[in-house]
Every structure is written in C-alpha cells, then in structure tokens.
Length: 344
Image (cartoon, rainbow, N blue to C red; front, side, top):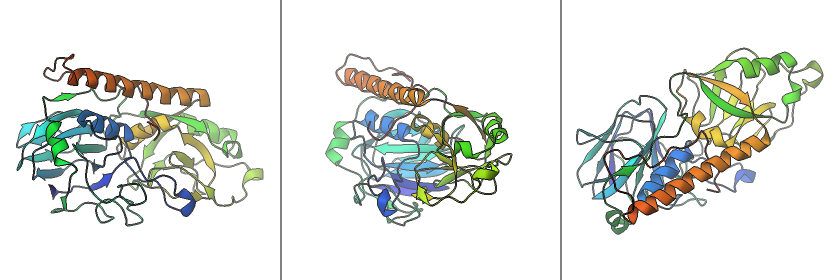
C-alpha cells in the first residue's frame, strides 16, 4: 500500500493504455511518455504493462506502507527519500514508513514512479489506465488526491526484487527549456494548405500554450491557411494521438493520449510515434520545431528504440547474473532520440 500525501498538479495511474476500443469512442489513455514507463518497469523486472504513477510537474509526496523497490523515470524532480537525494532513471529499495518527495523538475513535464509488482487497481477494458475525461479506470476514474491509499502488486515479488541501486541514463534529446525538435509526417490533408502555410508550419517555433493537457497540445504561432478550392468542411473521421489538426482559427492542435477518437479538422501532419514521448515532456510555454521525415525514417526511429530497449534488457540480465558490477551512478546505456509503439 502507498499513500498519496501530496498529489501535486495532476497525478494519475497509467499503463500502456486501453487499446482496441476506438470504434466505441474510447481512446487509449495511458502514459504520455511510454518510454519512461517501460524503462521504469524494466528496472524492477515488472511486466511491461504494469501500472505506474504519472506526476505532472512534480510537487508531490508519497509514503510507503510496505517494504518494496521503486524506480523513478521521466523528468528529474530532484527527488528525496526521507530527505536524502535519490536519482532519476534508477531503481532502489524503500522501507515501510519512508516518504518520497518530488519537487518541480529541472526540465521536462512528467515523472513516473514504478513500484515492484505494479499499482494494483482494477483492470477495466484490458487496462488500469485512468481515462480522465470518461471518469473510469485508474483510481476511481479520477486524478489522485491527497490522502488516497493505493494497493500495490505481489508483495513477495517486490521483496525478491530488492538489491543494490541500478539505473540508466535518460534518453538523448530529453526536452530542456530550449526549442525541441519533433519529427512529423505529412498529414492526409497536407495539400489542402497553401504553399505559404507549408513553409510557416516547418519554419515556425511553435509555443506550447498553457491550455494544453493530456487531451491535446494547443500551439501558438502564425495562422495556417487552407487553399480556397479546398476550404470545404470535412466529414468527421477517425483520429489518433500525434495527429496535428488545424481548426478554423489556424492554430495547430496535436492530439495526445487522452484525445478524442474522431474529428473533422484537417490534418496537416502527424507526429511520428518515436517522438511522442519527447513531445509529452515539452514544458508549457516552451517551443517545438517540426521537421519533415519520410515513412522509412519514421520506421527506423522505432527500430532505434527497440534496439535501445533490447540493450537495457541484456545489461539488466547481466547485472542480475553478477556480470556487471554496480557502482555509484553506474550508467547502463543511453537511449536514442526515439521511442516506441505498444508492440514493445
């Protein structure tokens, strides 16, 4: 059992998401940064889809009611365990009664707390993820509140996984306070936009506005315009996370994990799956810059991440077998500038 002493800005239970129900109008939800979640679960030898806690902008505190092992990944929130600093992208044992405190991150938006055995909330539609707009899944279908007490998984598995701290370095290209480069494929309605708007889309540093959330990132910048002969309304159609829609006001919106399943706005682009984790870590008020890539390049980016995760698996196996000596802040490997699909 863990107790949420301070829930912070927005904290929720998430896993890899709820897939296979978009035809019913139910989006996937799930961790906005799946790479951070997967690495956290690997550090604990958890199943890849074990539920974790997602914290937005830190400022949270959790007390542990049992001995267990935990891992922190994602944004570095200058975490402390009973006042002693602990590292991000590392796993370490905790004892009953200890308190983990997260502060505002140095960079990035979201921090993930994985616990050996996982967060043991009910499975609903094949997932433990919180669907905030639908009010189901996770912990009572809502964001976490101060005083919530959450069950954790198999206690014996948690104790067996204890050992010396070990970890990885954060992925290369982790968003800072500067402009973040995001790779994008042309969208189905790309040619509906003027040549000038094409240039504007690729040349602009778009600001992530404060009214962005888990449903979508609203961007601020110059207006994008459609060609007059292609300015007709579109029928509502299926959309997925990563789609860059352009409403009549001309300011792009990027759909995120909690985004709707259908929409009628034209789609000028689609953020490649390999960069969705990076987009999720871009701070409100920071900027993103889009660069065009081909389908081949997008698939290669996914292969790069699969290769990185395979490297993590091999080194952790060596670590458990005693081949790798653990030392202070030993780095296992560094991730490429890419992420993954659910198939990992």
